[in-house]
Structure formats: structure tokens, C-alpha cells
Image (cartoon, rainbow, N blue to C red):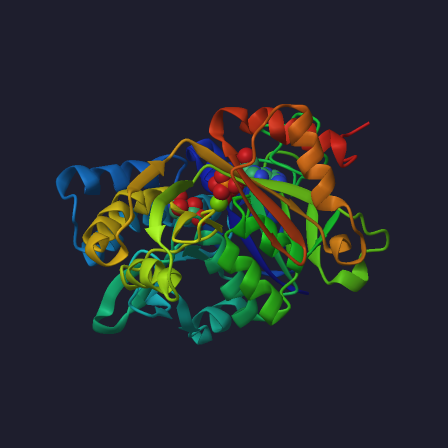
Length: 406
Ligand code: ADP
Ligand code: ASP
Ligand code: MG
């Protein structure tokens, strides 16, 4: 007997037939004698619809109402999955975040889980009842509903797996695992049998949405054994593991991309000590995350150009913040460009190999693709390019690093 968490994403619960298939899959584990917690997302497309209704109704909306609305998609699928299990003769009930409760902080829209009280679910699991938990949601002080950020059901699943001391946390999705890059953009992408926590964390944070970044962070901290696999086929997926478990480490394991960033350039800023703090301070105060940064000093040393990226969703706000700070910053021009994409090459093997970045620059140069900003970490090289070249660049890099399937 083992304890297992199974999470099903939006496409896996997209309609009643898919939900019945999910129930059949869960029943197999129950029949094998395992205790199971199921976590579900909303039906594919539902959360987007809910978000757009919120924005249509109120642009500067109350974040607490936003959460109450966008969390509702998971209530439907949790109830339906419980019903489908009951139809198969499996005792099951649905659980909303507040009913467990899954306690979070009060940063609505991107809340962090603080604690989970699993006592009731554990007791019922002992009797063979399956808990079907609505993913993506929790409850904050004042009993307000919170959500964990887009893609947050992954984090619900890993957090529940940690609290349940589960042997496995299976994340069922619409692809067969974690690939060397998004298989929907690069047909030659290869499925990885294993990937390290660290690489998966970097892949996720650089845009590969197959797992929410915070879920990987949590899996790493609590040593949860996460497997990513397809709910559509019966095949082993990708295991997220410790570095020691990987026998033959490639230099580059994967390539991630993001279309979610915008580039902002402040041209002709008067150069003086403290100028970076003067630019990035107000952005931080406005809760805007800055990712890549490059500074160019003018030839006479009096002015500087500062280019950086912010989330596309925050670009307009960032422009406003900087315009407001113009008297202090005294720049000539502010240019915002939302037609950019970031590509990141990732691999723990980079720590011990040189030339990874050079290969990236060379490959892009051969395709006449201009690099606008560069940033690196110990296991990553990222570049910002014009969005129109994204797919071309991805495919070229995938081939250059020897990642293509045979
Ligand atoms: P779910 O609804 O099941 O949570 P998501 O859409 O959130 O599914 O995540 C799965 C998607 O992630 C895939 O359909 C794929 O397009 C995308 N993806 C991006 N990068 C990768 C990658 N390296 N490996 C696998 N899938 C990836
Ligand atoms: N339904 C939520 C979303 O679309 C959570 C999730 O799917 O993980 O972001
Ligand atoms: Mg997802």
C-alpha cells in the first residue's frame, strides 16, 4: 500500500468524458490498494474565460473578488470527478481549499501556501475514501478565498503530496513528460526520462509552463517525487530527481522560452552614482519584477542607456511609473517593446563546461538573429530576441546543442 497524489490538468478534465477517463485511472490505483488524493484543474479554457469576465467588469478590480471568481472553475471539476468515481463504485468526495483548509497568505492572485490540515482527509483515506481536491485555491485570514497564480494546481498537488507524505506525485498533462523544449513548437523535441530539480526549476521559471515554478521549488524543498506524464496514453513520463540520480548528464538539458516579457529602454539617462537604484527602486515599490538588465555608458560618460525586461502584463504600469519618475531620472526617451521573446538554454553540465554561451551566440548569428539582452546564471544562458524569430531560433538551438530526436 502506498500513498499517492494524482493531479490532472485542464485538458485532462476538459469534458465529462475526459473526467470519466480520469476516474477510471484513479480507480486503478485504488484497486491496487493505494490511498489516493486527486487534485484537479478547471476545464481547459475555463480559467481564461473567468479572468476575462473579471477584466471586462472591472479593470482595476478588487483582487479578493478576482480570486473568488477565478477559483470557481476547479469547484466544478472536483465535484464532477468525485461523482464519476462514485459511479465506478469508488467512495469519493470533493474538497475546496477552505474546507480542508489549505491556509495561504493574503497576496491574492499569487498566494503562497502556509499550512495544510490533512487530518480529516487522512482519516477518510484510511477507510478507502478518495479526496478530490480543487487545485489552485486556498483560504487566507478573514476566510477569503485565494488563488496560487496561473498554473497553481501543480503547486496544490505538490503541497498536498508533501503533507500526505506521498510516495509519488503524478502530474498528468497533455504531453508525455518534460521535453528538451516545448514539443508543440519543436517537433524534434525529445522526452526526458529524468530531469534534476534544479534544471526543472530553471526551465519552469524561464517559461516552460509544464510545471508551475513554485511547485518545483516545493518539491525540491520537501523532496517530493514528482512525475510528469500524459493522461491520454499509458507511458512512463519524466521523473524530477536529484542530480546524483542522473547517470549521463548532458551539458544542455533543455531550452525554455517566454513570450511574457516586455523590453523597456531608458535612453540618455544622466549617469551618476545611484542611477540604477533611482530607476529600479520605484519599479520595486510598484511590485514590478525586473528580469534582464543591460546598461550602456555613453562615450563621454555623462549619460547612460538602461535596457531591462518586465512582465508584459506590467509593461504599461512600468511605463507610467518611470514617466512619473522622469523629473528625477532626466532621461531623453523611454521606449517600450512588447514584441520580444526570451530563450534560455539550461543545464547543470554548464558548471563544468565552457563554450555553451558562445554556441548560442554563434547559432543565432548564423541565422541573422539579433540578440538584444543577455543574462546568465550558473546553469543558464538567456537571450532576448525579436518575437518573430522565436521558433526559428528555438529549432536552430535545439539542433546546435544536439538535442534533436534521431
Ligand atoms: P495542464 O493544463 O495539464 O497543467 P499546461 O498547459 O499547464 O498543462 O502545461 C503543459 C504544456 O506545457 C504542454 O502542452 C506544452 O505545450 C508546454 N510546455 C512548454 N515547455 C515544455 C517542455 N519543455 N516539456 C513539455 N511541455 C512543455
Ligand atoms: N486553472 C488554473 C489555471 O488555468 C490553475 C491550473 O490550471 O493549474 O491557471
Ligand atoms: Mg499547468
